[in-house]
Amino acid sequence: QVQLVESGGGLVQAGGSLRLSCAASGRSFDNKIMGWLRQAPGKEREFVAALAWGGGSSYYAESVKGRFTIFRDNTQNTLCLQMNSLKPEDTAVYYCAADFTIYSRDDYYYTRETRYWGQGTQVTVSS
Image (cartoon, rainbow, N blue to C red; front, side, top):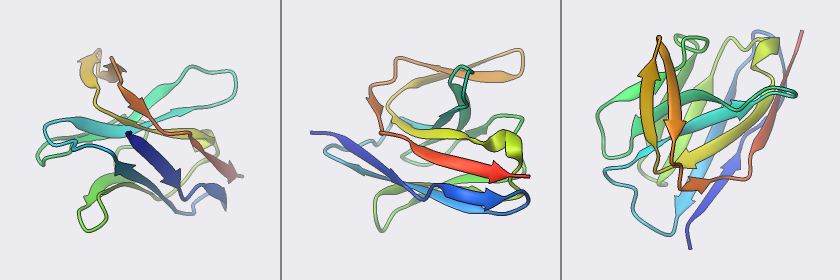
């Protein structure tokens, strides 16, 4: 049984940092894409960042580029998202996702056909 278990969310002041983690288990995700999406109240879920689990390409939404870093912790088979210089508009529930297709249109990234989701972790940035 595949499980994606997120941790690391919380409340932080604007300008602060948080690190999200997603522990993956139940199957190998080599040759798959893993990443993070978020959903703010009243808004649609949006792409944040992704990477190829076996190594290689990484992808970022323009709104987080230069502030967020996605990486794999190989020792713990964990997907991480380091979030620096947080802004109130980063407030959302952040979801870990695995095994999906990523595509771009008009300088934005979108995802589809996502097979696995985590339960979500709340990130709140106060002004």
